Each structure stands twice: as C-alpha cells, then as structure tokens.
Length: 584
Image 1 (tube, rainbow, N blue to C red):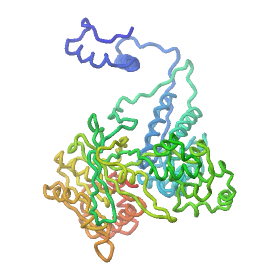
Image 2: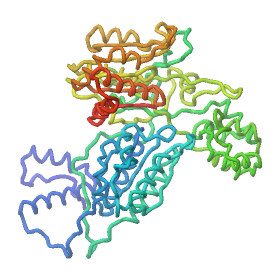
Image 3: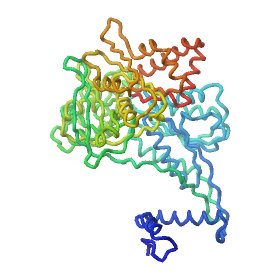
Image 4: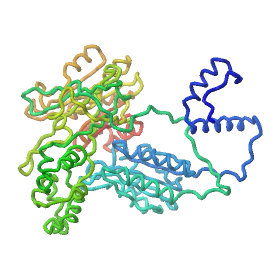
C-alpha cells in the first residue's frame, strides 16, 4: 500500500506536516521513489547511517557530447530528447548549441552526436555560422578516434536538402572521426526517423553494463522549466484587422487570439505555430485530377492534414514510382528536374501529367501539412488573456496560375472574427529581452516588427530603464505604416527612445532599413559599444544579410577599421550573444 499522507505522529510540526502532505499526496510512485533515493543519498554523503555496500561497484556514466544547430528549435528539442534517452542508457550527456561551440570541445569528445538543421538554400542556421565556418576551415583540429553520427534536418522543397548536416558529416570523417551510424536525412515530418536514429545510435555506442548490472543514471536536479503544451490547443479569433490601407498593394492582418482558460505561457520573442487548412478550391482540383472528386473523407484529409502545394525532386521520384510516367522519368534521368520545378507546385505536376492515383499513392507523394510559425506580437503583461500575431497575405502568379500562401491566405481569406484556430506555442529562448537596464536596438521591416511590439509592451510594463531604438521599414508611409499610432504613443510616453523608418516606395530611389542604419551609424556603434543588444527579425534571404553587412561597414567607417577587423568586431558582438536574429 502506498502511503498517501504524513501521519500526525511524524516528528514534524503541524505546519511542516501540511507542507509535506502538499508534496507527497499528489506525487507519483516514481516521484516518491526518487525522493526516497535522494534523501538516502544525502544521508550517505553526510555520513549519516551505514551506507549500503553494493554487490559490485557501479560503473560511472560515460560522457557523450550532443551538438545541435537550430534555427526554429526542432534540432534543439531533438537534442534534449537524445540527452534524456542517453541518461537511461548510462551516459552523461553534454548538450552544446553550435552557437556556443569551441572546436576544442570536439577534440575532448569520445562519442559525438550531431543534430543539424539546414536553413534556406543549404546554409547553416544563423547562430551556427561562426562555428560551422571554423569547422570547415583549415584551422579545424583533427578528430582521430572520435565516434560520431549525424542527424540532418531539412526540407525537400529546397535545392540543397539537408546540406548542412551532410557537409558536417563529411567534414567529421575527413578530420579523422569514425562514423558509427550512417547519417539520416529528415524532411519536415522528421519525428519518426529522428526517434529511430536516436535509438539506433545510442544502442550502437552504449557503454557495456558494469559487472552486476550497475551503472550511474544521471539526474539533472536543476532542470525545471515552464510546462509548454505539447499538442495544439484551440483559440478564438477575437480580432482580425487589415493594418494596410485600402490603397495598399499589401494585406497585413493583426490577429488577436483568445483562450478559454487564459493565455498560453509565452514570453516576448516566442512564436506561435498556426495549423492552417488548404484552399478547398485547390483540394477540389487535386481530387478531380487524381480521380477522387466524390471522396468526401479524402477531401477532409487533404484540406486539414496534407501538404498539397510543395513540389520537390522527391515528389517527382515518388510520382514516377506510382505511375511509371516515362516523360517525368526522362526529366529526372536527364537532370532537368530543378529547372522544371522552379515556380511550380504539385497541382502543375498533376495537371501536366494526368494520372489516376490511389489514396495510398496520394498520401505517398504528399507530406504532412506542417504548421506555420508566426512571431508573437504581444506581451502577456499588457494583454493577459490574448496572443497577437501579424500575418502578411502571400499572393503571386506563376505559369499562368494564381498562387497563395497556404497559412497566410487561410488567415486572410477564410478566418474571421469569432472563428477558431488550432495553435501551439513555439518557444524561442534565443530571442529574449535582456536585463531591464540594458539598451535594445531592434530592426524589423514589415511583419518582422511583430516581436518588437511585444518587446516594447514588455519593457513598458516592467518599467525597464534601458533605451529602446526601433528601425522599421515598409513600402509606403501612408498605406503601410504598421501599428503607427502605437509607436507614436510609445515615443510620447518615453518607452521608445528612438525610431527610424524607411519607406521604399515613397522616393525615386528605394530606401531600406539598412540605409537608415548607415545614416545613423555613429550612434548605432556608440550604443553597441555601450553594451546594447541588437535584434533582427524578418527576411533571411536578403534583409538580414544586408543588415549585418551594413553593421560591419558601419564599424569599419566609424572606428577606422579594416574590413577584417570590422568583421571581427561584429563577430565579437555575436559571440557575446548581443546580436540575435529571428529570420524566415
């Protein structure tokens, strides 16, 4: 029988017994067993009581290095999962962010697991760039004798699928490492193959059990974090406003979400995964072209659960396997796939090469519909029961077809006030506000301004003494100045110290946020030399790279540095974790 409460005869006061009962009564059997072992260990460490003599000495946990490179947080989550599984197998794992890696750490590793995401067209995640470049350089140390395995995360919609993980895998071998388990390359539906890789790799490198079967299981006594729901929850759309004027070429929606039991436990800098649905008209066309126009169950599956837009080389290969289409096979064999894919989607393949597909084949050539992450644009201190996001509708034309972003058009066109959305919190601990007295510089054009609205609300609510400087840009001042009145209020009440804006279509020569940075370069460098943190949110392909390049040039100009030394100055800010990015 399990003891459910502390008896009144226990050698504690009434208040102490009440406190203990609040802990013991709801505890699980595992928690009570852990507590018993912990107290026994404390007594033994202090020489209280006779320490039991084991039948055989326990074998010390074997060190294991787990290295991750992440942009969205998936690799980091998998690294934590791997560490948890490793402890159960007798390892003492050391989890390292690629952004914190010193290459000397690798020379000390005997067993190494690497989980690396690829960003964009084959690039490493932004925080991993420095260590990645060092690893690929001639200065990288030899890793003779290091046993390693690599898990690569990527997206088959991009040219260099899992390129970062593949290159790391090849480099570790070139430096003398011994690959103990072949690399696994994962698409967006990575959970199952990643779990298989973790299990297989740990089984392969697991230390042999000690005589008598004893080994040390590592316990992290300090790891206590806020519980984040691991599955989607339902939120109600309580506000849905197009922030652009009716004369703007853009549609940017402020969406406020309410929750029945209070807001989810987010922090400024976090994102929200939105589970969107496909356009029913596009689904109807897919069903018609594949011979399933009357299948309502399949219609529902394709609307809610399958990615019916992405087209990749892998899709074409599976299509050929399903249909035996000679033309598509010739395209693959001739190396012309990438040229044909550019600008096209799955519907183009089905329309160009009509084929009756079974339901199983439709599922095989598509992948699960992944959620779309949006930076949270509010602070719980100001909007206690709500979460706000900022969504720009994506619309364009290619090959004679009108295209729409899956999630953005869903939110813009088919979600209205009062509707429900499935969402899940996506924490981003690498994009957090600093201590209240530190200065903050924020660069966020377009929807990239979303997290900085949350930052300003948070800094106002806590009475932060540090200065706040925002660079914002969009197309036209009159039609596209997102949250203009809020920024004016923040300037008036002093929480927003400075704001510089760039509207690219208001002058004959386009002006962007990086141009405004260059104009204010002396103050910018002065703030950074004074310890300010620098945040960038928005487009990774062009804007983020241009912003960083401008900052390097600013240091070169203001401090009369060579390009190499200016680059080193910005790299030092990054190494100090004062240059933070949230890009997409």
